[in-house]
Amino acid sequence: MTSDPYAAAQYYASPRPTNVLAIISLIASCVGFTVPGIIMGHIALHQIKQTREGGHGLALAGVIVGYCLFAIALVLIVVYVLVFVGLFVWLGDNASNFKNVG
Image 1 (cartoon, rainbow, N blue to C red):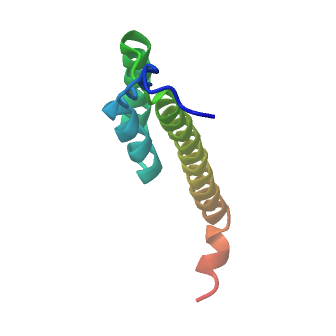
Image 2: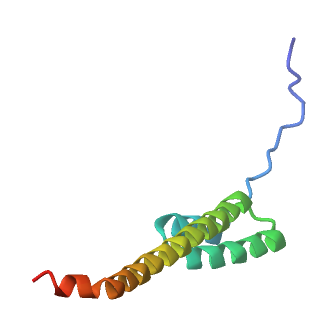
Image 3: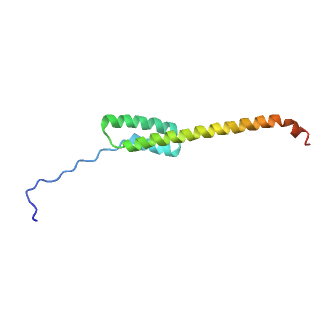
């Protein structure tokens, strides 16, 4: 097979630029800044829809990770508060037992 010296050159489309806010959203969410990560992820998704930039998966991952970590933090705060409220109630009910010890 001989190649045609007059064949048209192949041109490749340049890659789409990645939305910077999508990258920052994922990093912020993974580091623990969940609320800024969620907000930046939603903004990045909106920008990507308008400008057709790359990074949709990054922005979506930033939003999902942010929501998951935020939910875990809320559950831990509720458990923490319930444990201490229960501890204070238990100590209040058993205060007379501690007075008679000494």
